[in-house]
Length: 66
Image (cartoon, rainbow, N blue to C red):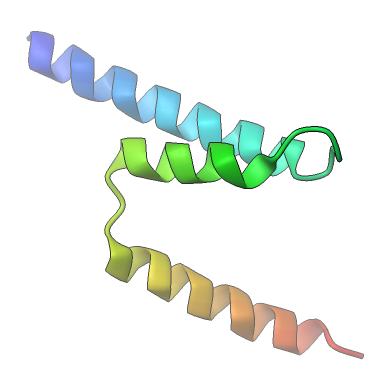
């Protein structure tokens, strides 16, 4: 029971940190990437998943070039 609540709390905090990181990325005072990295670490995202996400982001940004 406690393990389930602990895992749920970690997921909630991890997602909240990622959301805060994305929002604070637009604010010049706060470093958004710190929150995003902390959220990903809490969620236990592996390096392979981060690499796949980075590759998708690169392809998406290449499509945006005018």
